[in-house]
Length: 332
Image (cartoon, rainbow, N blue to C red; front, side, top):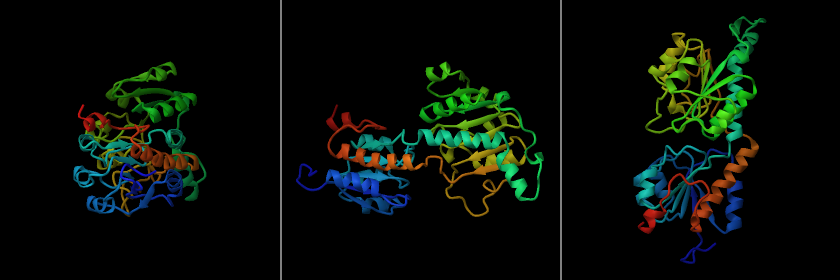
């Protein structure tokens, strides 16, 4: 796949914590594109490692205006996953650079994981397991438990994953209400999900599950005020972004007994420091940002980021763009 200059296009994977990048490499090899895996942790690392690259694939490395300005040949930044909070999308658009994610690779996995965490909380699975390991053999560690059909779950964010979670929870016989800044999708109304304002949802739900992207308008959305509005005995579930929740406020609410517990697949700081009080709280269930994972979702994610980079290099419109720099690039 030689470019207009007759040279082989190059893609740099700035950082990746997966065991290997063989699925990506197989796609690039077939297309005749060179790929390099780097270990960037800072903007300076990215600028040095991606010099001359036609596109980048990133996981956690910061891609700000300074990086984009230094990499004049780069035409696209493809993100492993859904969130693009480490990428300056506005600067990329201004500089004619595509920003692309893979929004649908793990919809089933993340929504399934959120359902699993919900059931762990509502049925006291983790508390009972810990009690048995400590020598107990009765249900007292999980009291009070309630029949699922008497419980209401609030879904904050009703995009792909939130909508899939809502449908699955409805299928288990729970009542579901949803809030989304763009409004509740008609498909969820048809499935029996009730629309609610955010405050109303927090005040009337027995469990609240978060499914929003992280951005200036959603950072610490669940802070002291929101936690005060949640009904006593309610649970919080977060499989989206750690920054949606004010960790200190959540810990305070748990210690005060204002909410019954939380299940977190994501944290504000990952991995957590040894002895982190929130992670070690007896009424918190934590998984290591693993909600996205299955063998199938991993393969889809890794091959699709490569295909998106190839589309950009070929001058095609990517399948899942976050921005549209084409008008800026053409002076429209």
